[in-house]
Image (tube, rainbow, N blue to C red; front, side):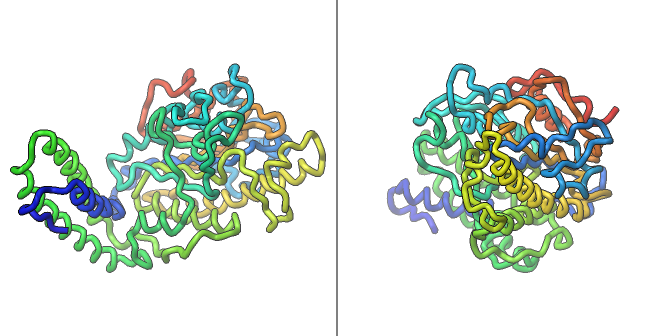
Length: 447
């Protein structure tokens, strides 16, 4: 919309112009397809499952390279040499620490922050910046999107979701700041349109046409802004400076998009909607996750298979009751078997993501080689609600010096944040401390 300089400027007019410009970041950001193999970036992926796991079905009894593939882990057997099973990692700040119930909320809020969330159902929520967002602030300087937050299950918007804790704590694992949780996007169509625009496919010719149109829109907006600027007072000039900063960032993103060649673009059709079946939904989101990494639109993604405390039923695998209910098994063999059925089903969907990454060429290796992909939960066992010896596996990371094919048992109650600090360092984002971290996990390299 052209700004009419013959009339006083209406605030809503500027916002409409601002909104039109903000639509442009839906463009994708790429690196040159022929970039040197040594320049391939390390990606970070965090895949979260709720309610913990049955330990005897997940945790190997043997350590090192001789570890056995357990029942829940069977779908991941083909990736044994790409996998590190990690045990004895503790999420201390998800413990009650005098706050009583609320282990599900604390698990979700602390998994990537290492911080004890404030117990509240109101607006004064507080946790801490999460590992993915620490990485996003640095790695996002080189990509279209600093990070993506994906999910499968609709978030809950009620005030409280767990014993006096806000639903904000169970809805996401990603925190931009101590008081700002990142919302999770569960619609494959919305994610596709954010990454590739609102076309029906990722056809390169159509994308180039959209880029040219967006470039023209920027020229148009910049011209109007230049005419407007002399008429503004000091406060409005500051606001306009912020607007221009956003335009410059859009221009940077367009330049990134123009660098990407057609050979780097996966062929995908725009999804129609949200599949009702978990496995289909998870596969579609996994395909989008792979595309976002492959094209270097982002290097940081969180993916929640469900919000923490989920009670989703899985009738497609013979579980008509809620999955949360069966995790409170009280040592009932039938409930334990049902809980393990769900856990293996989730592992199967995760295995699909791993296979897609392993099948995708990336420089001198695969996308999996250049990704540190963490899979696990913030609760150990759903029956006891504890946070010691969490079920965790790290896949990939070969180019980051990670040696798979092992079960690494750390010293008892080693902070989970030590692993997160190590992952950040291997991705080129060194940090002194995260939450309750006390150091790094040197065993990842196997030396």
